[in-house]
Every structure is written in structure tokens, then in C-alpha cells.
Image (cartoon, rainbow, N blue to C red; front, side, top):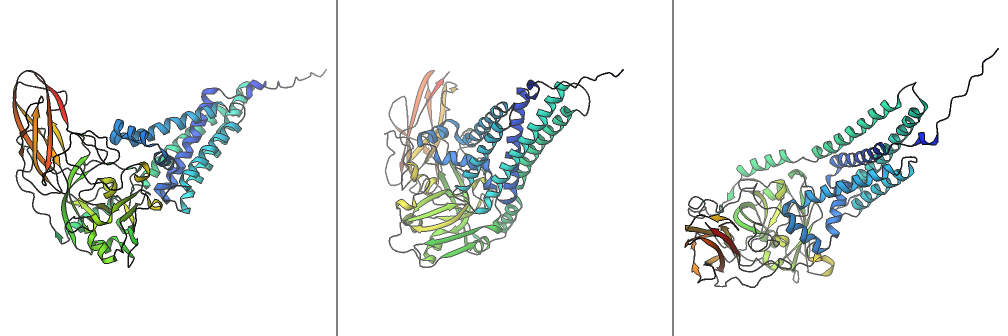
Length: 529
């Protein structure tokens, strides 16, 4: 008698459903693979073509002015890491939701990954510094994301089917676990590899530092004794700012990692003769050292977005005279390798004795990458957003027309940006408590290129008294000041105002940084205990 064998029971439709934690993980891993692949390929071909960074740059370019100012005021120089971190959180949340939406069918997740890939593709394609080869990185990211999602999703469905069918056979669950780990590690390795590949240029910097050490340089006058009060009054500002402490404000999400050997500058536009310079061409020109205080227009009253360094470079006025600036040209329109643009008044650059320069060195070494290596522009007396183009690659002599509006002019900032006469209180710190008796009050004042002639301080609304000034270095640099008050216990408010070398005293009228720099008398409240 034959025995009938019952057919194997078919799994219920529920067996073809991926558990939601695993589905969310698949979405995150696939998008992580896309980001890693994009960074890796960008690191090999062009670091600026990373779709992740391109999306961040797009956010920065199209952010409304109030949002931009809020970010700078709230987060300071941490605004870029916070933006990138926030983007990562949003993207991974979207990826997780896409994975959960694909528990039964991969199509929702594939669609979301594709849309994210197209967004990165568009961000790269419409970047200011776009080149056709830049499209390779976002294409690699799109393919990696879609392929990873489809693969992991299929393995997860097979594992769910196996679990419902019962024991036996090769464990697809183990295959899924191994595959997921491989995708995750691959994404991390690709992203890290892209970052490492994009970190070229350190060897080039070392070479430039050695070149500067062996070059004939017209040195700036020696910095005299008594230029600051750091030794006499601890806590006050040093005259020269170290490269590590020099303030940094720019729109670059990723610091360009460039080699001096690859650098080119095209000087063109309204000139009699176009000039193209390599880095070696620049270094063969006369080098000069200048001590310059640089100030950011975003610096609030009493803020710290101001620093001083010794810069070495080539005189920009001589270069423009060699090119032959044509009549009517009133703007030097500069473009960075990352697409940032700035417009500098031509008459300021050409002013005799102004000291505008293309800088290659800073405080005895090559420019640090975050401060513009291999070449940046420095124009004393103008706020940095019109005078301090980092990673400069193009210089067009033109006019202040609507067709050539620079990055910050498009966002409502002023066309010309002379630095205002300002002062800052460094001691006592705001809301600090100091012992009763003699209280040191100290700070800095600046008015480039005019220089500081006088600083006055008053306590609790009383009469103004002159402060002691440190030794002057020149009109292009800040000047330190200090004084001392005998104060009783209680709360006190100190104010300061500076007068430039031409006799003009800084205004009491308060103004926000937009559009041409903050103004007002700084004040500090502190307690004598």
C-alpha cells in the first residue's frame, strides 16, 4: 500500500514581509553605501564632486539671508559641521523610512534611493565650479545605492521566506547578516578612503614652506617690544595670532586640498594683456612680507572674528599694473576653486601703499589649507568678504554690474566694505567675578588702514579716561590698550571707544553686521566681590 506524501505547505503571505527593524537597516545601509561610493570616487577624481558635500553647498548657496546670519551668530565656526551632521541625520531618517516602506516590495525604497541620487547628481551638475568629469561621483553613488538596496532587500525576503518554511538548508539569515556587514563596512571604508584620498597637499605645503625659507623676501619691519600686554596682564590678546587660532570664516564645507604644482591663476577681463600664472611663476616674482590684521564683516560688537599675522606674497598692485587695467574697471572679481566669488574695489587694490597682495605664506610657513593654500588674496583695510578670497583661481577685472555680482553681494551685503573703527574689551570677561581693589581693564582696538590714535574707557557711565596704548606697529594692524580702576564691591559696567589716527571716534550708534559691519560702543558687565 502506497503512502501519500502531503505537499509542503506554502508560506503565508506574511512570510514575505521583512521585519521592520531589518527593513530600516537595509535602507540605511544602502544609502550609506551610496554616500561612501560617492566620497571615494570624488576623492579620486575631484573632491568637490562629492554629492553629499554638493548638496550641503547648495543648501548654503540658497539659504535665505536671515537663516545664514542665524547660523553664524548661533554656531559660529561650528556652523558647517552642524549643517553636515544635520544633513546626515535627515538623510538616514529618510533612508530608514524608505526601508520600512519596502517591507513587502522593494520599489518604494529603490525610488527613494534613486531620488536621493538624482538630488546629489543635480547638486553637482549645478555647482559653480562644475566640470563634466564631476558627474562620475554622483553616478557611482546612485548605482551603489540602488544595487545595494536591491541586493539586501532580496536577501532579506529570502531569509523571511526561509524562516516561515521551517529549518533546513543553507541559512539565508546568515547570508543576510554577512552581506549587511559587508555593505556597512564597505560604506565606511569607501567614505573614509575618499576623505583620505582628498587629503593631498600636505607634502606640497611642506615643499612651499621650504621654498619660502630659501627665498629672498623683503621683510616687514621687525615687531617692536611692547606691542601687547600679555606678559603684564594675563588673559589679554597676543599681538600675533597663531595659525591654529586665526579665525576662519568661509562657505567651504570641505577644505580644498590642493597642490601648489597644480595651481593656476588667470588674470583677465578689462586689461590690456591677459596673464596666466603658475605657482612657480608667482614664486619667481619679488616676495614681500606684511603684518596685517584681518577682520570679518560678521564680527559683532566685541566679537572675536579678528586676527593678525605676518603674510608673505606678491604685490597685487604690481601685477595689475603689468596687466594694464583699462579705464572704467572698478571691480576685481575673484573666484575660488570651490566656486566662491568676491568683488574688490579696483581703486583700493591699485592704491599706492595699500599693500594688497597674493599671499603664499603665513607666520613663517606656507598658508594652512583652511586659510587658502596655496594662494589667497589679502587686502588691508577691507572686510574679508571683499578682500580675502582663499584658494584663488581666477581674477577678472570688470565692473560692479548686475552680471558680475559676488557671493555676498547677492545676499544683501555692501559693495564696498572699509573696516570701521572699533574696539573690544578682553578683560574683565563678561559676567565674571573679580576681587575688590585694582581691576585691570584691557582689550584691542583697530581701524585699518588708518591706525588707532586714542582709546578711552569709562566705568559705570562716568567720565571717559584715556587708556594706555601698546607700541604701534602700523595702520594695518590692531593696537592693544589697558587701564586700571579701583572699584568697590558690586556690579559694574565698563565701556570703551576708539579714535582713529585721523581723529574720528567710533560711533555710539548700534548697527548689525549686515550690510557693512557692526558698530557701537562695546560694554561688559562684571562683578567685584
